[in-house]
Image (cartoon, rainbow over all chains, first blue to last red; front, side, top):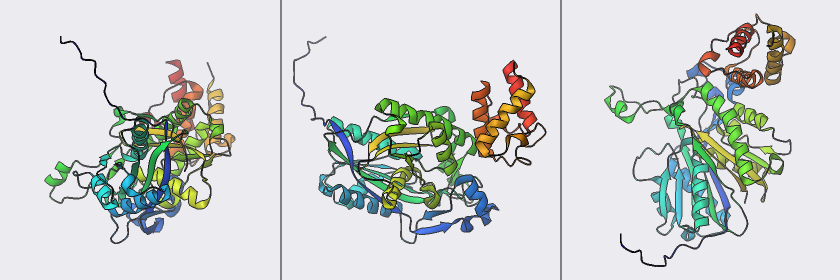
Length: 338
Length: 82
């Protein structure tokens, strides 16, 4: 064994903390009421509202794409954060509906935004993708490997929804949400609590593998399927435990929270989680799903965005974010809203 | 060991908490879906609360077999005895 030389390694300068500096959102422009989706699933407005709390959802309008929604949300987030696009040195996009397997959406988005050679990549963590990406961004800024990270959650799910699948046809929506994460002297993003339960890897899934799509006589776009009861049970009760673990890890209690912003899967899950967590009345709960549908990786920033617009979220509020979905995977953290 | 009536009583309270249905309506012969209008998602909530209350495990694939209140009480009794 050779003797190790005593060398000094130059390491990045860490930041004591990271914080969300700005938020931007973009919703699919087409408003699709329940009346438009009920016939294909032989259902009713009342049935959908009772099962999901969804009154209408947003789907892309003419000319809108995953890229255009991501770009619009990102531009708003950068403007809100008070920095220039050139200062962004990392771009992370969370999505499961980018239909180009390579390259990542993040590199083109970075280019369109006028950034300067940032690290740029997509992550695949389905509905929990945004909170995963936010966890990565927090760690990158704190470690000093990036200074300003653009985190985007974007989905175009209307294209990957079966109009005749009774358990999902009315659920999904289209949109994008973005935040800029930067260095901070005070805590702005708490420790992430994240994990997965691969035993239930097929509880939410793409309906068919692309290879089987190609082999089919009449190729059709795959769609997202799920086992409703299994997912409801896991999301409502196991995720309430993850939410509590996140508060514990951060060193706060439900009484310290101002906002609860869970993944907007279904109003019934949001209500069941809130009950299981025994959230006090002063905690304002995001309920964007009613007008937006479930937008997977985009749902947490979109839900927070609506709370801003409606005045129920204010700068400095302490919010618990939690996202969960296919994998099954989850990620949660407490943040100070910008 | 809890009696059938005690289990029914406590289960009725759970159904009432989850759905608002009066506990007195939750009788053994009643069907959860047809008589009590408990939908599949509420049923999951009832089952999870019952698991905690009675310290039993009711897997997802068993839930669909619990058609009546009596089925559920029966299942809980057997699971407790096991």
